[in-house]
Image 1 (cartoon, one colour):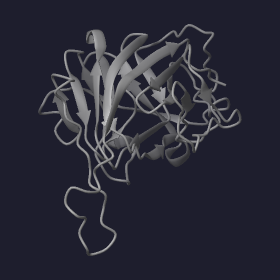
Image 2 (cartoon, helix red, strand yellow; image 1 turned 180 degrees about the vertical axis):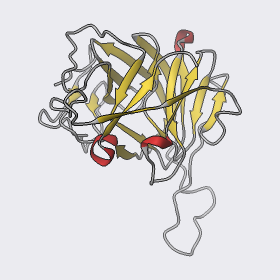
Image 3 (cartoon, helix red, strand yellow; image 1 turned 60 degrees about the vertical axis):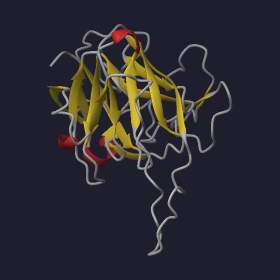
Image 4 (cartoon, helix red, strand yellow; image 1 turned 90 degrees about the horizontal axis):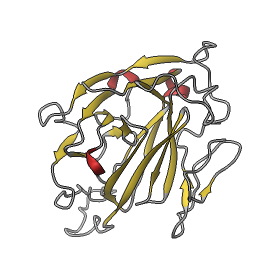
Amino acid sequence: MPSAAAGDSIAIDTKRGAMSDRTAHAGETLFSNFAELDLAAMPSIARGEARTHEVLLIRATPESFRGYGHLVPDFARGEVTIVTWPRPGWRPIVPGTGNEGGIVQDSFEMLRRGEIQHAVNRAVGRGYVIGWFSDPATASEAKTPSDTTRIYTHEANYHPDGGQIFFPRDGAAFVALLAPPGDDVKPESFVAFHCDGSFGIHVDPGVWHQPMFPLDDRAAFDDKQGRVHACVAVNFVTEFGCYLSVPLRRA
């Protein structure tokens, strides 16, 4: 079973790695597996149990990013979009209410361990396995990856309640895997945006995403997002029989 990042206490269902239904206590990181797959027994690409879908790579610019969010030149000044709670009937939400959950911010850390990519979101106290650099069925933290120019990922999610800002520390280049809003999402809906590390991004509410994929073996981001943190997920392996192959290079 994938281990936690150093120094973290991660609550894991050792059989499935399922997402815990409780909130993290101070200093604790809960392990989240939105796809609820057994991460120790993933379908094999080599054995034909799952195919791969190659994601298109493009350069992130203000124009290319339109419809997904916007580029953020300054983390401190960046504002997160918060969505007002939807009204259940014909009576409107009272102005100034339904959007008072507030914002949380902290670091979002990406760490490659052998052939497995980990991520820890300290703003919400969640840890994730977000991809593999070899066949997920046999990938190991004890092995050195032979190819780090692409990564296989199995899931994505969106936040209906608010947006999220990722801003790389130390100018780290990264790739953002995104798809437009809509629950009828497909593997073909996703695009990989290369970001050169000179700016951050605001992912709009409803936009499908994974944590950011660094081009180097590790990277830390300043993260700012809505405190409610509702997640809607897609499982590529179960729903489409594939992994997304995300290119990790400059566009």
